[in-house]
Amino acid sequence: MKRILFASLCALSSFGSLACDFSSVKFEHDFAAARLDQCKQINDSTYQLTLIPENTPINDSPWYAFKVVADKPTDIKVIMKVVDGHHRYPPKISLDGQNWQLQKYRLRKNKLSFHLKVSEKPTWISAQEILTNEQYYQWGKYLAQQQYISQEVLGNSTQDRPIYKIETKGEGKDWLVILGRQHPPEITGALAIFPFTETLLSDSKLASKFRKKFNILVIPNLNPDGVQLGNWRHNANGIDLNRSWKSFDQVESKHVDDYLSSLVGKNQKMRMAVDFHSTKKDIFYTMPSDYGMEQPYLVETWLNSLDKQYPDFNVIQQPGNNPGKGVFKQYFTDKYNAHAITYEMGDNTDRRFINTLAVSAANTLMTTLLNSDPITGK
Ligand SMILES: [Zn+2]
Image 1 (cartoon, rainbow, N blue to C red):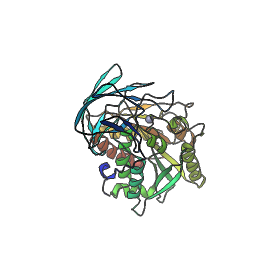
Image 2 (image 1 turned 45 degrees about the vertical axis):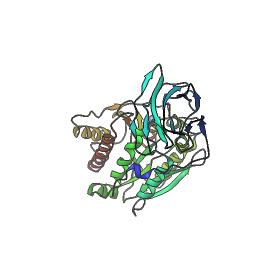
Image 3 (image 1 turned 90 degrees about the vertical axis):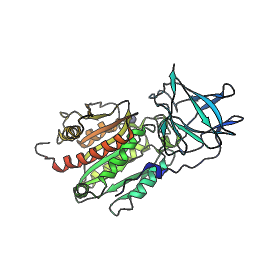
Image 4 (image 1 turned 90 degrees about the horizontal axis):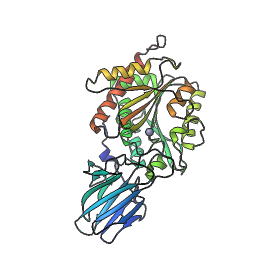
């Protein structure tokens, strides 16, 4: 199967006019995943934009995405302030909303500023690459052209947006679960889930053999409301979904729990889960190998083997156990006695490397699971 480039997937729709509209310069935020909370003109060429979280308290991940359009070619200065937080993402610039480059900027006393040459043609500025609900849907639709892959609605979000699941069913009972986008701005984790999944679903010899034995469930975009609204972290109820796996008071996590329970009710077995996120650095949060999972060294074997393939890159494994927090990884292990990891890519990790590593991680995981011995647990 051919790898899909993100650029070919981008389809942004508009939702009426919602602009910070000044006489000759406009800041538009009327598209999917756009976010700009307040705008103010400081002088002829300087504009101050304010980023405000959906609610507080909240993790410090101010998201922004907007387009700038001017009557005529003009040089402007943009200053961005954050309410209730600190800047996390260096600005990216694009002339088509698809291909992005790092924008030169200055950060002083939590004010981020940069100069732009703007014109009638829109200039896009965003915290990270923009990755919309529509792009996920189109990706799943593309994958599901293969007879052995399906894409279906798992359930609807708080604001009634569909949450999709992509699935393959083999001959065995074991399931590998892949989850993504609990936290909307964590784009580098999202950039990893595409190549990771495509490797598992590819027509390589290894993947074909793997899928005969293992079933795969991918829920790549669990928080479509947060993605649409350009939220910093939460769903439409202002809740961190990765703290809702104990209470299950949010429909998004409830849909997943219900579905996994229904599979287990049909004599299926949860074997492993990988949940994709982003943070400051590349790190893999695991469950401690002495926690009591079946095959206790499975994840260690997988990640050690991945580490050996990259002499210049350190695959950091950080075991942790937080029973009270409602984190997906903990829930999966506690409920199914199976391994779960949080796969975190650094916010600024090289995008090509994210791709390369995800392909290796998926291949190595398949080899590890196929070779794993239920008796020795390795
Ligand atoms: Zn996260």
